[in-house]
Amino acid sequence: MADQTYATHRQYVPLFHFFAIPVLAINVLVQIYIAVRHFSGWSVWNVVVALALAAFVFTARGMVTRAQDRIIRLEETLRLQRVLPPDLRGRIGELTTGQLVGLRFCTDAELPELARAVFSGDYRGREDIKKRIKTWRPDTLRV
Image (cartoon, rainbow, N blue to C red; front, top):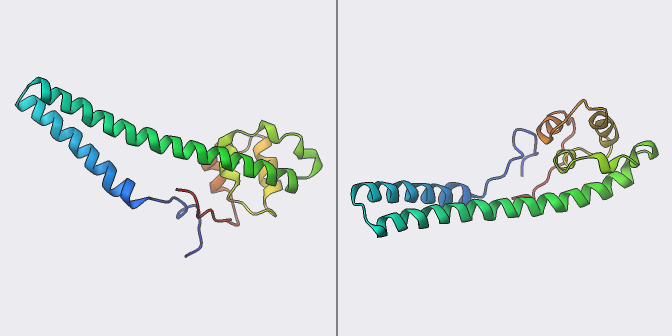
């Protein structure tokens, strides 16, 4: 696998991103078209079911990423306790989940400097933090 960078770190799940989402989106549009052209109780019901299926898929995806963020928050909190100098360890609880998710990509050597910049307010969100990482620590398990 090639080195991971900010430009290449996003992972796509082909079955989800390139099959399920397009098929469900097309299904919603087709069901709306049918309901408009051939209005009936069943056609309206089919639109409702198509929307429910699409909502289900996005909700399930959100639950998965939220669970991953919680695990990352725990892992990074433990890593920060191990790596940060004593003057910063007491501030770990100030970091948001998004900031911890962003920090997970930097190496242990770079972490204290980057964490200090985050605590001082120089970098706010996860994308801003990830853009500032010089030496990338890949995360190949995230989906």
